[in-house]
Every structure is written in C-alpha cells, then in structure tokens.
Image (tube, rainbow, N blue to C red; front, side):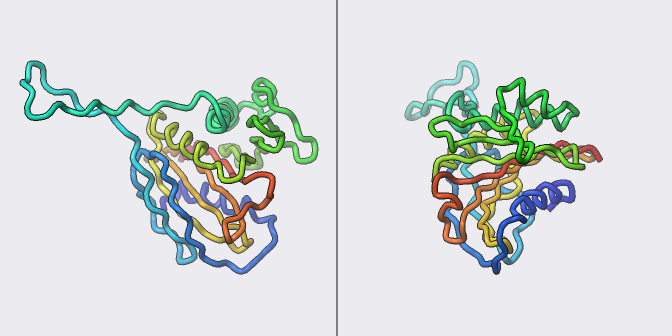
Length: 243
C-alpha cells in the first residue's frame, strides 16, 4: 500500500490497542453491497486477513445519443440517476460530522470551537465531543482530541446492531462525489492481535505532494457478534497530508 495511506491504516489498527489481547485468527466476513467509486487498487492484505469482494460501482448516467440520430432497435433504458448524499439517518449525521468537524480541525481549527458550533457535547472523561445519531441514546458519533498528529481526525460511531450499511454507503458516495474523488483503496477483514475483528474500508486521493483519505472500520468479536449488546461500533478516520 502506498506510504501515505499506510499511516492511516496503521492508525485504524492501533485504535483498538487498548482491548484485551487474544491470538489472531482469520474470519471471513460477508461483502458489503454498497456502491463504490472504483474497485480496490491498494496492496493485498497480509496473510492474517481475507479480502472482501469489491463494492458495487456507483451508478453513472449513460452517454446521450448524438443529436438527430435515428433510434435503432428497442428503446434504450432510462439512465440511472446520479448518486446523491443522504439527507437523514445515520449516514447523514456521520457525513455532517466528517465535513463540519473533521475537515476543519485537520486544517487548523480548534476542535472545541467547531464541535460546539455543531451541537456536540464535551465528555469530560476523555475530552471527546459527542452528538446523537437519533433513535436511541446509545447511538452516537464522537470525535477525539487530536494528538501530536494534527492532520488526522479520529472518531468513533455507536450505531444500531447490524446497521453499518447506511454509514458505509454514505461515506462511499461522499468519496465518489468529493473533488477530487477519493478512490477505494482497502476493503478487507482481519482479526487483530487484540482479538477484535475489523472490517476496514478506506478511500484516498493521492498526489505527488499531498494525500486526502478517509477510513471507516466496523469492530466486532471474532464470530461477528457485537462488542456491546446495545450497539455496534465503528471507527472513523480522516486525514489530509502534505509531503
């Protein structure tokens, strides 16, 4: 995998370092039938991971027929509508935090300022800022204080058990519509040494002197069951780098 992107994946892997240690095992995971901008182009995962099938491509409009061209054969099927970002639900809330909190803080703004401006509340125990996803008080998205690496925004999402697809689909569409487009680079599952199974999906735009990347990983027990019976857990990373 590219050097620039490797740091983001390492950060995603280290996010669960505090969990109890357990021998690493390999567990296949079902594919996520969410739309994507492009098939994975990143390096193959290590021997302890299993690649997931590529996400389905984001539908795009068919090219228009030349003006004045006579119809041939059966009428052409209607062009698929262009993808649109969700305006409600978990995916919409996560994208709002990504755009209105993560992007500003990696560009130098203070987390406290942008979090307050977007209705997030301070958790004094760990310094994170949290807002609800809706539907249940346990469903939240939190952004953690930045460490020494100021070009990274790290968050955690608690959502209804088994309901990761709306979030993954929203991020996938956002990456496709982003200018410049972020290309799917990683899509695989791995049971890490801490005993947690992570399904990682990462998108990146890489230039000779800059990189923009987003990563969303779902966390579960090795058998795929929830770490917490009340909600499922996902980690969100966003990074902008200059080389």
